[in-house]
Image 1 (tube, rainbow, N blue to C red):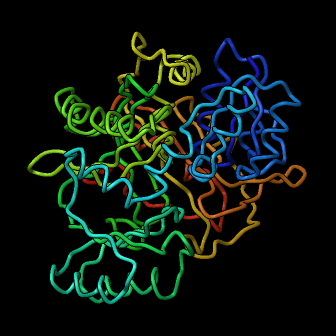
Image 2 (image 1 turned 45 degrees about the vertical axis):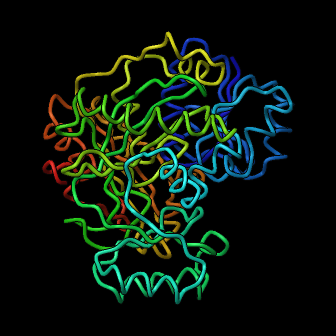
Length: 422
């Protein structure tokens, strides 16, 4: 089978690594890919958001299946464009992608379907939003409605921080149209978890849970990022809790989407808060998470590609996947300046030595080759991922690998996976 992966991050590198191992793959391409993905697939210089260019490439290269990694091309309608040309694709239609593309849409759907989530209000007027915040008090959460590259959410410990977040979105328009409307919602307490399920529109196949750490610095300090690390399994997330998440959140969501005329095919990612009352939804995504995908692919024993095909073809009902018992951890190395203006062009050395341990795999997020030199080319640059018999063992392997990497401009959190609250 001739397969194209769309995207250029560590998530797409992890997917490429897993899909390249499938015996049914004849040729694997990535658009646009990165220096690490180039070790698994042929990279082509087509942007993930160039829908016309991607369709033309897929037709010219006789691509039989496209796996879309990032959220932006899904919201723009890439799957619709490919399927209209009879090219099979993994991912939701543009209308179904609204579940991630609009937090207001997702919250309204939860309210209609009785899906447990934080109480909320939607606003386009800054004064009205601030009046609501003054009434409710802090802590409180302010979210840009649309896609904001993981940076549109403010967990405000005080009213002033919340007011500033309102101004940033509605007055200063820092997020453009993505922040033309905001959602202000109740602050939930508990432990976070990310839960994933494949969907063929009718049936759902649960994957496994992971925990993503979004804050920039140790101790969950600093601004939110796209994710500074992840690990799996999640302590305390057993079969009973998985069943509850499926019954109370995943299956009702898929039913509500069908009833709305937007059946969801692809991946449903439920960002959860595990509260004293039970799991509650923080947000939905409709694609694999990053950096969670890195740990999921390390733990996956089955061939990923047939499962993705089954989701697209409506054949998940009789499908199953097998997972390793070992723990996996991913530590993100980012460039100085991230999540603001990251320092690009820094020389990275020592990856061969760092990945000499067979338990370690380094997925590239933003790298490029300049001759024999490997250079940083973005904010989150490397995902150092490791397996272990325990989370502590996996953690030790990952940080030992990081210590062998020579990249003066890079940094990472040092507390990923250090405890059940890490």
